[in-house]
Amino acid sequence: MRSFQQRLGEFHDRGVEILAISVDSPEESRKLCQAKGYSFPFLSDQKAEVIRKYGVLHPGGGENGKDIARPAEFLVDTSGVIRWVNLTEDLRVRARPQMVLDAVSRF
Amino acid sequence: MNRRRNLSIWVGFLLVVASVVSYIPIFALFANTRDVPWVNYALFLVGGILLAIGLQRAFREPEHYRGKVSGSVLGALSLLLASFFVAAILYGGRQIPASENALHVGQPAPSFALVDTTGKLMSSSDLLEKHRALLLIFYRGYW
Image 1 (tube, helix red, strand yellow):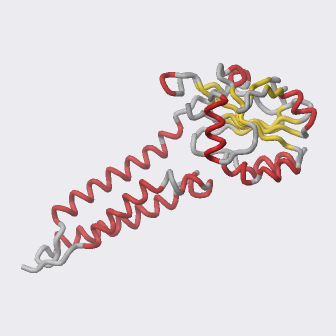
Image 2 (image 1 turned 60 degrees about the vertical axis):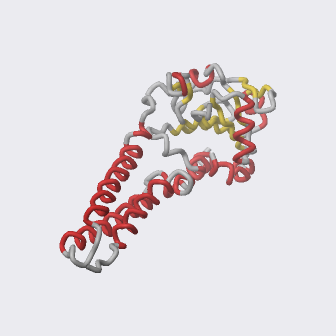
């Protein structure tokens, strides 16, 4: 997330908006954004409905067995089609901004 | 009997501890040192070598060097710390469900409308009208 924030300008230059989605409440996300300096939108999917639709639910993965999202990144083009996906098998290993910028340049 | 302090043991142990405590606040911040924590592994290696040198001295020349007891304790502790770290890296990070249910490339992305941190409803179809693409980053959250 931090690395995407650092290169946010490059995404915006290419017409790409970044959206972060989790089950956190808007209030929790607001605190996170303030603490870490994230300036792209953080969306709140508290019932994990969108998370389910994208097939990235981690049932019982959160505190007290709460359903949360598994880490994943989807790149959606303007016609609403998924053009690139990154599904890590390790929480620590996430998409890097360059991977996404490369995918965008292949549009 | 005037035996020398066995500094190698202590420096080795400190390096092992430094490796364990530095990962999250420092090396996990950068993808290059996070995905494969090679800096931490290198610190374990150097720490382990120093501990081994110190222990060898303590047992081969007990008349010159201290550290038979402290070295053994710190050596065992170091081994435990390093094993715990490696287990957390190799096993802990992989406790997520398989990805086979996830949507894949070429499929239509389900539209959605969710609130942002200010409570404003943001709809994916509105956003797609204004942008060339959307990058959706799903994350676990901080509860």
